Length: 217
Length: 162
Image 1 (cartoon, rainbow over the protein chains, first blue to last red):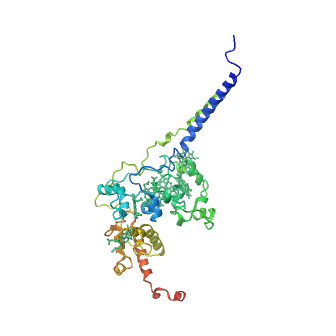
Image 2: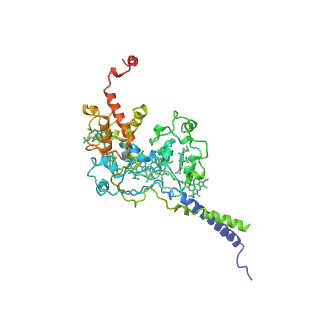
Image 3: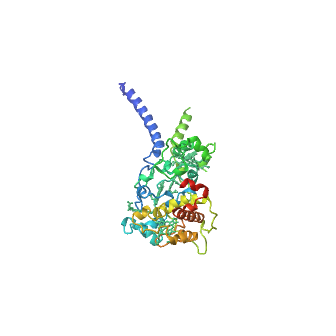
């Protein structure tokens, strides 16, 4: 009986086996890695909002402080989105006929809040708190980027666990003086106090900030 | 050996699962939350009036910080009413340095922040009562700063200024 396979079939069989194993490994890598890519995590993707609110215009153009709108950021876990009333402190008099702002006026007239779509959203099993970061010298732009350059808000960091722990394992270089917290253009310069001095200034304890129970409680 | 490999492989695949994400927790911005109505005859959290605190340097610094956040967009750093929003078409507020406002009691500023005034909306939900006193004290200091005379400077420091 003649051989069914020619000798070169050995090579083909080996290649197919190797290929299957490779494809399987690639599948695992994809399965594990893909959910962590910036693409899936919507980094730098804008979201359709009821009103195309521009931080560039209001923060860089008009010089309004973050706390004018995100009132509770220094004292509470959530920064808070501004109620319609806050928009209307100015827009009751300015751009009163703009069609863009119709949802804002309707919202005040009908006593129905504007439903903004969330942009930064941690999974529910993660505990996060704004006030501690503000009090300890972490500025908004360390996590939210230069929002004053965003005509439409988008996520500026991946907010994976690695993002949080990369700072928690060595916060020093990311800290800034208290007066610069809300300055979205801040960068370390020659006269910024050293990381060690800032760690001391803010009394950041010499404990392990990457303990699981800090963020998963 | 094979079992171990199989085990490891299973774990490797499972590590991609992320079923923990669905652990319902009440978060602040869930769209279904209806506008909360305040029951009548109640004082909202943190809206309880407080007595005017003594004027200290710390109070003025706090007042300056709060003033720069909430008031400068219209009233400007100097309090002359030419802030950025006014330059963009908001009705100009009066300068703090007119005689009527210089004669007004500090309580007046507190009340304007709490209840608003004419075209100016209330800031009660943004500025806590203690901070309202701080801002009021800072406005008073601003007014004095624009009307200071050499007689206000302590005698031992006058030499430096003349």
